[in-house]
Length: 323
Ligand code: DGY
Image (cartoon, rainbow, N blue to C red; front, side):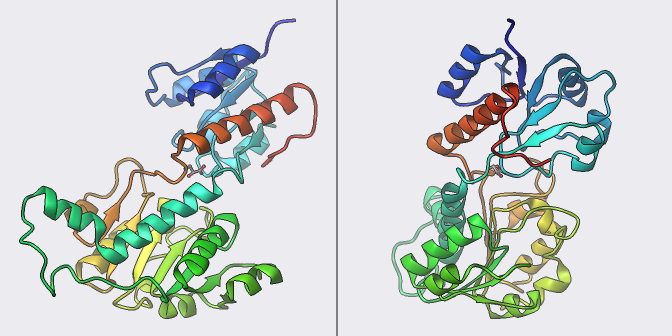
């Protein structure tokens, strides 16, 4: 029997690509270049499974391509806001994702950004590299304490809770959160976490606000000129969720006018073409969407896709079905 035809949109880690070659009639993107909408349409028409990732856009126009052979989009990534889920449903396409395995590495990057923005890490690095450092002095580059400060989490799912554990148990931070659901009792007890009923309440009480909510219509530009006004002038914003949750221009204005003290960003609107305004600011730490970028995590994400594909091709229940 011939092997199923599988299309992978970007390079994956070596060990996972080796397994794909073994198991499937696979087409890999050897040059790792971003593919076009036309190439995605053609993949949907010519392969049994297509495996996109978070930087590939699958809007309705792509998913409505005629004469599709593909019945499953086995996404490499937990977020799937790059796939039009309604159009996938309308086209009877299954979508799977890769939850759980990137929780810790993404929470680690959120904590990295929190520490960087609190302690002006990137700014200090730039100062030293530019040979502008004049030596230690009692008032240079003063920053803010992390230990004992209040961390407000917007979204309190797996990654938000992992971040809260690192912050509470590692840095003695007070934890508050804003989420549609009350967290399990053992979680709130362990973290001494308190749920805020209103977003404004969380914003006004936090020294650090970290975003962990999914992207979607209800969270688009949740952080905007109006909501930023509730944050303390000493507070910092951290975003490792999705760029669309923050209105870039509003954040740039708030940082420029020192309405808030700083920000640490790993994700942006219109990645990788982030708003140029960020590049001129000292009080923002910018990372290139590194949340899950450890070898171990990216390999585990690939393994998750393999498990979803294996289940699909053997008619077993899909471990991580989204639709
Ligand atoms: C995801 O999987 O959604 C992450 O953003 C990748 O780092």
